[in-house]
Amino acid sequence: MRIGIDVGGTHTDAVILNGDDVIAATKALTSADVISGVTAALDEVLKQSGVSVSSIRTVMIGTTQFTNAIIERRELSRAAVIRIGLPSGRGMPPMVDWPQDMIDAIDAEVYMLHGGYLYNGWPVADMRDDEVNAAVSDIQRKGIKNVSIASAFSPMNNTPETQVAEKVRAAIPDARITLSHSFGRLGLMERENAAIMNTTLLPFADRVVTSFLGALAQRGLTCPAFISQNDGTLMNADFVRAYPALTFASGPTNSLRGAYKLTGLENAIVVDIGGTTSDIGVIQNGFPRESNVIVNVGGIRTNFRMPDILAIGLGGGSLVSSDGRIIGPQSVGHKLVTEGLVFGGRTLTTTDILVASGHSDIGDKARVAHLAPEVVTQATATMHTMLNDNIEMMKPGGKDMPVILVGGGAVLVTDGLNAASKLHRPENAGVANAIGAAIAQVGGESERMLSYRQTPRAEAIASVTRAATDRAIKAGADRATIRAVDIEETAVPYMDEGATRVRVKVIGELAQ
Image (cartoon, rainbow, N blue to C red; front, side, top):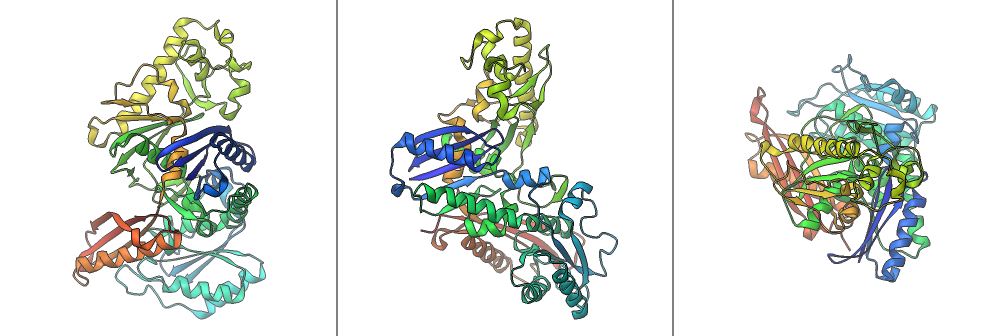
């Protein structure tokens, strides 16, 4: 048996799976401190199921806490930022295009050092011990414990990053260090940005993981616990403490994986309607389609392996204009149960429209009896138009695909969707995100730029696959079950030696 928990902006969902069967499911309001909502949902599913905690093998948790910390500029720690790449990049220092409020929030000290390598293995410049020693001494003197280190083309040759990290650890034994090559892709500035964000979250990650594990221990759950990451796979607790930024966008990913599990459709469009937004994504071969463009997180460019998600301001708590022609993007969110008309509040929401149309008995229907029928009809049409138009934008190659509706707000769709070749409303769709967390496997990814002239193709792919496999094992995968699920080869034009970018993703079952 497994427990899956997903923390959203409005609700915290939890399920207990016995094999493939959902034996208990619940939704609790997300609390301000998050952990209270998690424990409330956990207590409810344990009570519903009546199972012994000793029979639970694993607990999987998806959380938005780290994404929200970046977006809201809170719970961030001061960081030291080291870039190794001079003389290149002098005019584009770290965080050059960051929003000023984010720069102020982390109050970073920046150090630019000579060194690094090019894609073909040639050095940019020799490292200078005096520069490195001066930077480390200054970090030590200023009492900074969180350090980000990025080097030019470090996924190709990480020696500069590891050498500087060794000197930092020697001088500051309790330093928390993020090396950009360990989880970023090619592209120095985006990879550096990801490393910096990860670094500033490290103390917060330690507190969050400790809180989660403590809540489980208080209920007698001594089984392993895992956290969802943004490619639909899992990380163990220690891995999350080191790489909290890998959880960014894990919520939509869990919903897509849950939709796949509930329907068995390996290729479909998924619409996850929550309290504030509708997230539209595509599942291909059972996993989320990844975005091939630079992804902004809190206004910062990154190259994370993010799912390709289109979020629109339509949810169960979205505000509706008096004529029904405008919906969202503002939402009452988790305050729906106090501010919506049917709950005694004064705000017209999509949930009120749903009740007024006769498609739901939520709350007190008498409180929306005054709504004009034409307003209800118009608002219902506006909701469906918003979804149809945006689903069309997400269709791969514009071809028709089945659409799976999940999320607590899926009840808003009452008239079908013209953009869907077939519409699916699976049982337990309201907790698809928690199911997605519960079924997740453990993954790893590696990316390098290689020359097929210098290294035979099969050998090159095997090398990148080994690196991805090592990362999956560190995240908690069973080596014997690991397999490659995606191999991407991209020839790089205008470069010597037939340069090819090779990316490999592997997944495996949880190690017992």
